[in-house]
Length: 313
Ligand SMILES: N=CN[C@@H](CCC(=O)O)C(=O)O
Ligand SMILES: [Mn+2]
Ligand SMILES: [Mn+2]
Image (cartoon, rainbow, N blue to C red; front, side, top):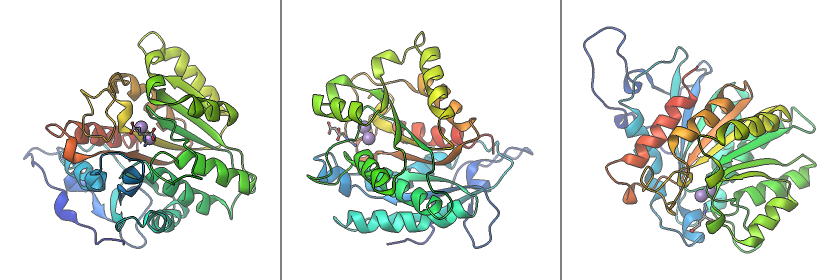
């Protein structure tokens, strides 16, 4: 289930001038006793998307993000590592989620900032389980804030089927079982793409949500303030980005492209606010489907988001 680390994906142009490195020249395979840095870990799965009646292909997402990140300019001081992939075999989603959690927890224990590359949004339950495994022995009631940039709540009832549409309902159940608060913010919601039942569940669970049409140049300041208030109530943050939050023109390579979406230019300040909060423990990027991408557009957006998230390290 855990693949060898394939460093051949890390290729790109080389400039002869000094101080001109790119990611492919700096990223290293994760080794034992590596110093803390940002660590990429792939989750090659679209089993959750298949269960959710979506377009499969996201299992190839992690490699496509690495290829798109490889030639981007390196601006970091701290190291970056590639920890390889966890692969979901056929429909063995729960086993793959467990395997990812098992890989993530020691990375968090060692002080890394893991960035998990999807993979369908079923990645989110796996990321959460890794974070919970790291936190459980350390804190009795951790105040974790989950910030999801997504057109969808992904709060479908997991009692029917566990899929890419259920991860945050699964997290809510897990928090309830542990006696931990469930703090969930979902920014970019499309009213047209979420049923009334999902809006009701979001209200019942006290979710902070903002619709795609409200995230505009004029509305951004207010949303930033709401986000900052949410962040102030948390001790650590888990950021999850579903690429279908972007307009289909910017992110065509997803299972469910957005007719409207929130442009990258408006998402970046929100990502920066999370990054610069000093509370970010874990991030993932979900739903890249290279089969439906156009000229690598969506992979480039995903790579740019990884670049942005890790810029200050
Ligand atoms: N990851 C989540 N996906 C959406 C899919 C919506 C669709 O296929 O239209 C959801 O379940 O709501
Ligand atoms: Mn979505
Ligand atoms: Mn989603």
